[in-house]
Image 1: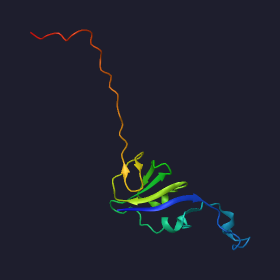
Image 2: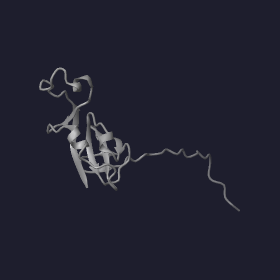
Image 3: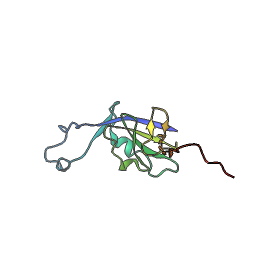
Length: 122
């Protein structure tokens, strides 16, 4: 299962409908929306916390996985895709739009240079 909730960016909501003396105006908050104009709070607060086998993943625009967690409300996918999945995923994996691809780390092990032919064993 993989649900991609889209790419999230910061925005400033219209506060003209809130009275100038309303207590809400004293607080500072971050507001995010995706490309479909869905507000982040509607997604974050709709997902149950710590669902068995489910993780939430933040993916940068280039596909790098930068955060994995089990509580959507604790994440802020600013300039990131937000994905819910039961697929195996690790930090720094690449997301290609459908799958998480584990980066292969190549390790260079130097081979000693031997001078001359190997000695024969008697």
